[in-house]
Image (cartoon, rainbow, N blue to C red; front, side, top):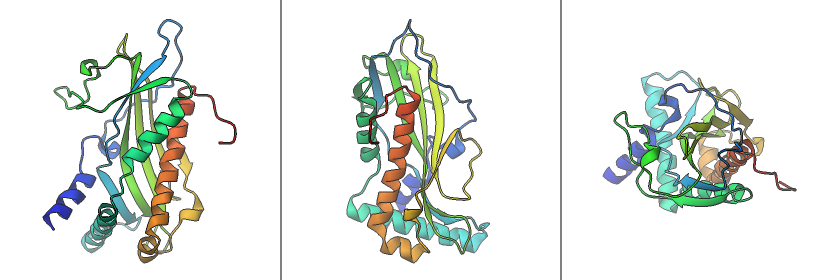
Length: 237
């Protein structure tokens, strides 16, 4: 039980969570002739720390406890099956970005500044730019107490030029259920209705299919990041 409590807390709390991040303006990537990017260093993708299964009903104490139980039960099922979403996202990013850039990965510890934000200048890797993709909220969300659950995946992406150390791309993205809102959001794709579940019991009964819905969502967002960075689309995708 202590392990499960620790695992659940790790999913819910974290400085990288988009929902708690300071507001930042979107920065569109504009290729530079002076600083061309051929080699792109991508930071290792860390698992989400805000995994939620909830409905949009305003949460009183009893409902809030129920939401926590649902989230914990889903996270426990992921752990029993050894399922983690971050490696799948990393593979999709590599596949997408590799059509334009030479992709190298940095999987070591990311140095932090005094304000706990990443210190990209201290990352020991040779590349023209650094791309940092990170999770916000992930899980399943029902717009109301009597509506179906749909997948939710929220990502942030920042690219820093290693010559100027300027941020040359920043976006927040979401693969969202109907009725889901975010305070700061720059790109949103509607969740595939095939991955809707009538209630929590149906969600757990169709657990494997629900994971497919999350993977599909993050793959769509990875494709959007690649699109934003000028990666040519592959025919048939």
